[in-house]
Length: 105
Ligand code: SF4
Image (tube, rainbow, N blue to C red; front, top):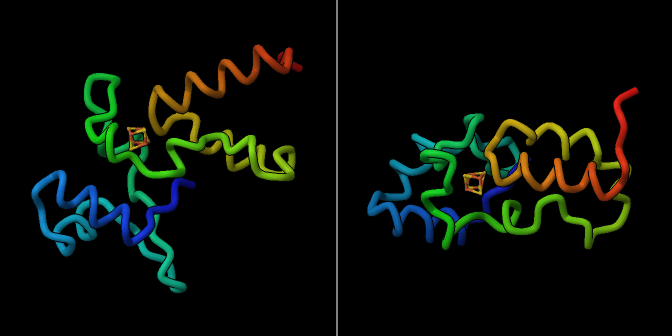
């Protein structure tokens, strides 16, 4: 899941020249703990296979699949959950499969 921080939501809503309320209504799903995630797959910001907010994309997108964090193998399910979110993520997963010699079972 791609989490969205308050800072990122503010930056993207400014970039899109929309209010935070409109941004949240249109693009965000909020959890009970206040956690925010994008509410649609494929991503709202995908336009002709390109990210239309690339310069302002969320840290979860920049860091995907977060190989710098521990316990990657325990996060495989969530990694593959994003497969259809956008081609950038799809391509990262495909490259990862090649690197790891991932084979169909
Ligand atoms: S990188 Fe992909 S998932 Fe992230 S905001 Fe852009 S289009 Fe959406």
